[in-house]
Image: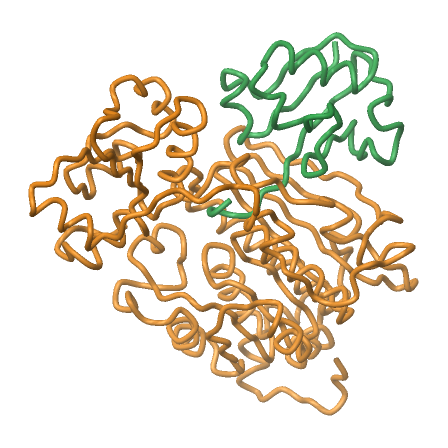
Length: 387
Length: 92
């Protein structure tokens, strides 16, 4: 982050004046921002505010990794986008918005699904990474990649009303390296033990708060101003408005950078997170098109919708509503003599429902609607509302 | 009695109670007590062998009990014990 040869134009000096006049910050820190390269992984709820503030603050080069397109249901929290961008790639929509905000910033798009095959190549060109992803496999992968490449990783995570922030793998002025995600949480929860997808949810303003804190820590890491949140772990409970900051330490048994490392390259993180557990036997599936055939051909079967009533109000395809949490209570009312198709929004909750009914109640006639109601809307009934 | 702070994702197993008051001498006794009082908490805090799960951190005051005496970390009436599980985002 050498900043000796870079100078600001008058327009930039005027724009960044409110930074430069802070005595502890000054033109020197602003120059560090201008020469810095920051990678934001995920441009969703956390990435939106982080990108807006880092662009406004004048970080010279900002990379954005996202493979997704803007959806109307994103706009409840992803303040980077508007209704005119629906259906467009997020990185492109983000670039347009951010360049309109600050023309002195170079926005680099990575319109791809970051994975073990490309992560090192994407991350290596940046000075600081901010993790704004939404799932455990990607979080462990980003963590390991930043360890292998020796980059600080500004971590933020949210769930419903709870937020977490820390700065991982940060080397301080004395050359001491701080802990990372694997020191904090050695292993992820197995799938199924935490609520999934639409059961989880998040209050839209919470990623605004946590993503902004990530932007703050990125700026501190780049400029060296203040004390980054390294070796500390911040949690915020939006319901009770309580925040706590805990001390965390490196662990000798960290498999990537502990005393005896066993991981020297990126691994299969879905397997690590138990996403592909071999012991689970597959459940029977039906495609949206085949379900439609059953419906129009008058085949005797029953359709059950295990989503929540609020989702049923948005769109439904004629199933009987039994939310996932109530499925066991209604098991004796589910027929066994005809085929039963169970669906949710995208297929995860219906899978849970089927496993529960098969394991606890011995059902053998259950089919999971592949891709859930979203697949049905895409393939059969596009006039229904997606969410 | 020690105060135990339950994180929002686990409050559905504690009748939405955010803070529990527990009489105990160690962190281990606290875990035992609250998983008896709220049986659904058990599978989220302990693995089948009864060990604390590695994706759930427990802090006594500001410090991780793994850096203190783990489950044997002593507690008193002024102790604040925080349970902080790993969270990954809106798609957990």
